[in-house]
Length: 211
Image (tube, rainbow, N blue to C red; front, side):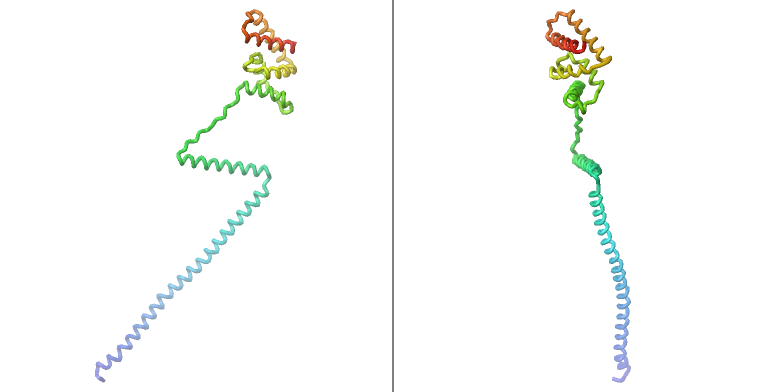
């Protein structure tokens, strides 16, 4: 057992120990950078979390400020804000309808006719004299069509007679001249047409009032 084979038998365990030690050192070297990376990741994650918390706090503060501003708004400013929000909602609704393929038709409100405006003007003079304002266009229309029963019905003509009492200047003179000219035309005609008879009666009333 003391030959050369014996020496090899005792050297083998030493080589195994050295290999194990080397492997252990390699493992330590490999482990160290991993732990450093983990530490770096932890260090970077913490400020990110802090930033998220700060952002959340900032949004909450902004919401609180907006709520405070809305409370401080005057009634007029609130109306403006509400109108703005309504417009934005309508735009969104239209956009959704377009995307859905639904056609949007604009309903154009019909403007009142000249007769409707003139009669409304006359009614306002009678019922709301404080709010009423003189409008030459409306007065001219009434003077031109006051003998036409279809355009100026009887209930409006009675109000118009009261209105004519305040007629002055050139408008009064022209109205009398036209009424007299109409009467001459009526006298030269047969006078059997019922429409002409109604018109003649109105002319007489106007002449009695203004002359």
